[in-house]
Length: 184
Image 1 (cartoon, rainbow, N blue to C red):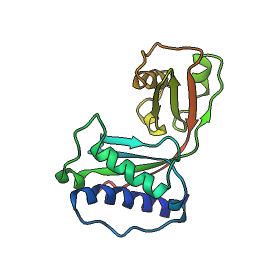
Image 2: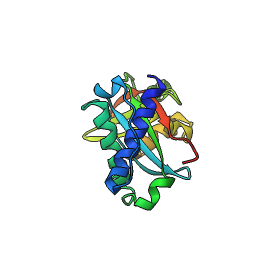
Image 3: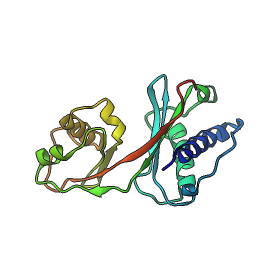
Image 4: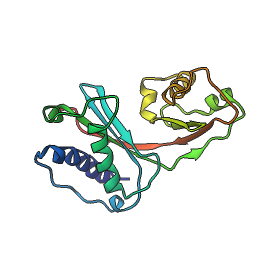
């Protein structure tokens, strides 16, 4: 996907948040991909620290609607953070990740699953008995070791880090990502 799509997604994400405050919004460039189904994650950071991250794992609405909804959710509904305040918007940096469709991983046991992980490339969804967690590929930037990546993903899904069961399901996906410039 061209950079024009990335710019269109970033502007829509920022505008969706700004509109909640009644703040001015920017002109929104168009891109044909915005009118097709797509799944995004919107990540908000301040001075390099996470401030919110919400997204869709599957394409269930058009990309334009998905990025706007996830931007608002990241800003105002991430349970890990208080809702974003108007004064924070200017210093908040937005990143939009566009997810590829997730594909199931086949593996014989946990060690086999870990061997198949591709650091820096794979986003991973872990599911077991109604519990689910995901890490975007960007998480590899701080968790370089595949065993640690999987253990912390289990923890995110509400499972012990040493948990494993034969019916654990893993799916992998890749992302294209765009981030606002540093000088925001």
